[in-house]
Amino acid sequence: MNRTTLGTVVGLALGFALAFGGLGQMLIVALFGGLGFAVARALAGDLDLSGYLLSRRSHR
Image: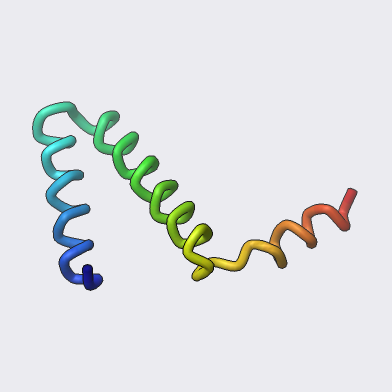
C-alpha cells in the first residue's frame, strides 16, 4: 500500500469518527492510529528506537 492510499484510508477513518462520534472520538482514533503505525514500523525494522531508549537510560 503506497502512502497516498494509506493517507486516504486514514483520512476517511478520521472523517467517519468525527462525523459519527465527535471530536473526542476522532482524537482517540488518531492517537491509536499513530500508535499502531509506530508499532508496525518498529516491528518491521524501519523505526530505530535504540538511540532514544539509550539516551533516556543514561540520564538516570
